[in-house]
Amino acid sequence: MTTFDDREKAFEAKFALDQEQEFKAIARRNKMLGLWAAEKMGLSSESADQYAQAVVRADFEQPGDEDVFRKVAGDLKGSGLTVPDSEIYSKMDELASIAREQIRAGE
Image (cartoon, rainbow, N blue to C red; front, side, top):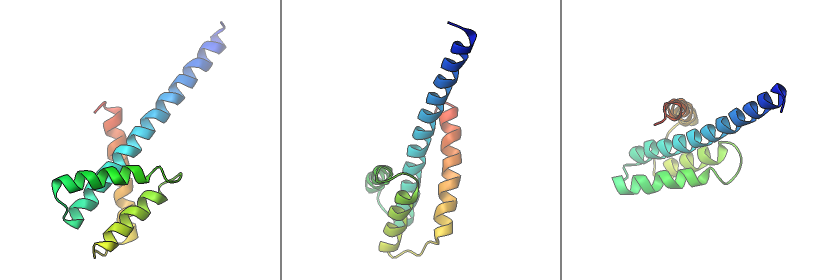
């Protein structure tokens, strides 16, 4: 095996690890977003956990973040709350940063 082959395998392994960490970070972000929305809606602790899991599952409907946004925005509106789209997107960005830091730190 040549040095080039070794470097290629190292890059592939790094890419796979990065993808796995990003997947975990987004799932964590979605859970935290669900808990944030549940708190706004006044859900009990048990209901909040169930709702957060539903938000995580919503991310598997289609690629990207729109499915998660639609779920949270629709549920907030359905509970009678008026939360601007920009606030939800801002919270998604904030929580994504926190989740990535936590994953990198091994939490």
